[in-house]
Image (cartoon, rainbow, N blue to C red; front, side, top):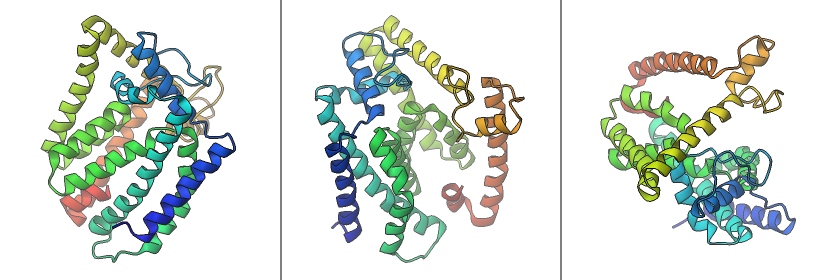
Length: 296
């Protein structure tokens, strides 16, 4: 039975969506990218390298994502926007509950349930949730997949957990940073299931489109990711961008002396990964394998 927080949070989020729609601001520009790109995919038109909606609206996710979003193409975009916004709102409410359970069970062992914590979480993160509802990104859905995956992994359901991790990695490949963590904690079933999910997600569009077209589409995806990764330093016009990324911060701190290349981005990532490894090993010795996995 949903508790009082579930009803109140759901009402607030639905009201937020309604106000956006009434004011003509339920734009969901990111969803428009997925929606239009999926439409192009279904009609055999170019997907990568074309902007959808805004000038910056390039589709840069895996081809399998086009299949996931294809059902929304059957709906007019205004209707698809409302449906997707409601999915995001539902994900937000579920995530707050899931995160609370994980923290109490793994980090704050024995801490009693407090509905006030849920309200405080909603209050602190409200501006970010509003942004996600306004943009219509997949972030909240991927976060839900990861939280449920972690919960299932803690319960010993490694196969379904790995499938969810693999799905997140397919949609946003930077989540492959989870693989070293899974390997460090000997989550072999999760790694295997994630690898199989990624393989299936890559092969399915190839099987549907044919070998030549499928491989070509994945090549375009790789090119789109390389181009997008360069934007952690610059926009296409050469101005600064993405000030909330570690790469951009380092670039600005160095006064622009740090080479803005993918090689440097990879080096920074390697240093961060190495530091994470030592922190994880230290936490494992201090609080144990299971709790370290979630607290890392």
